[in-house]
Length: 497
Image (cartoon, rainbow, N blue to C red; front, side, top):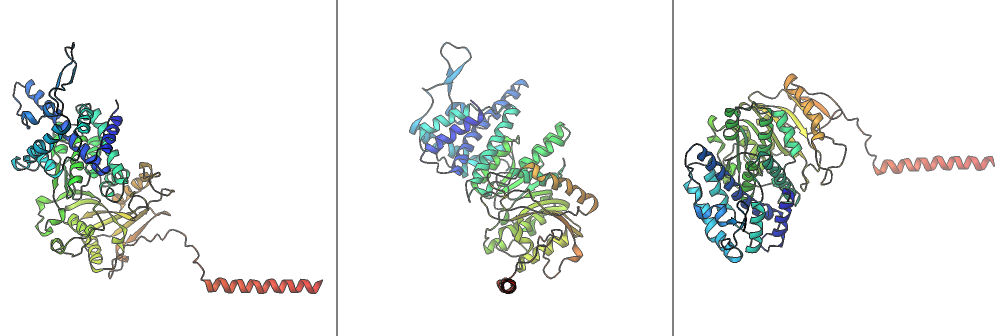
């Protein structure tokens, strides 16, 4: 059975179950089951490695809570010396299985959060996940079938993990398309890849997303850096353990992000479950700063006054607070690419003006990418991507208006080809300080920006101006003039007759 069919079968079972109500529930429930299935393979691999060295491996989980004991106890098939099958005498099902999962398994795993040595360990991730998620599968018979499907998924080979990661990304995308609540988890991957390509993170640099969601930016950064780096043991260890960092507030997003990174090959992701905006930016020190920041912070949210006290520019707008956090979290010389709603460029309130001033004076805002409407499915918000480098003030801003030549939507989503021209043109900005001038791209000198408003609105000067629409009064006057001319012609014709 294909991986895709396995996922579909699990979704079908969740759809039938009275406890899972939506696409968000489906991926949440699939995630905890897959995580425990993955954990078993990880432990088995480590035990095999230890055995080859003549060492004994200390299992993370106690015997009763390991996958082969509670989820899939097996026995030899009758008449076979190697083939195994589910041992129905030992395997729990029905109400027994649900009672064990809810009453014993989840509470046991949740305690790892207190026992773990640090937040960067797999033990801590186990505790975080199972103290935040709840089992919503109410039928023990459905759960039994789901466990059997999950057991058939191979996690050990890198090719299998690669296919699984793509399928999991598809589920995240479907969740993002499912409606308002799902959109927060999904940024189109072609846009993420373009942002990474322009920022170009290198081995030895620390990359951060303080609004990690499903960890799309971090997973794609891992792929980008892995493909381009020299494959040495030190580089692999650096990429795995000391390169990618994130924070996420929402329970489900945190779990999905952890699972997404694991499937992309990162064993113990450096993702902290916390409200990023709860941190006072005045407490951020050099050791807390990063070389590269890539993010799509939530916009439209409203933060409480006590959270706003953590920032120099007070505002309830979540995205504006995240921008301050990101600027403060960048090392001097650090590079960032941030997706944000386009009104941040033009709003006239004090906080918006102050934020633009802060960005222009403390960083080189060298590129603004204007995205078309419909880029973010299910969210009718126009967005821009701000590319900047911290340290030197802005001298020139290159604007690029992306125009794929079609209406964007579910049937016409953004693709990698749409981004190729921008990526190629953006390369010249880092070399010359300016980008090309075309019908959809232009340069603005920082010296020409109004210092009273610091307005950065997208106003393309290279599009030929259309004739202004005429007012109703002008149209009526012209009609009367034409009527008079017509009457005069008719009168002269009659006189000739």
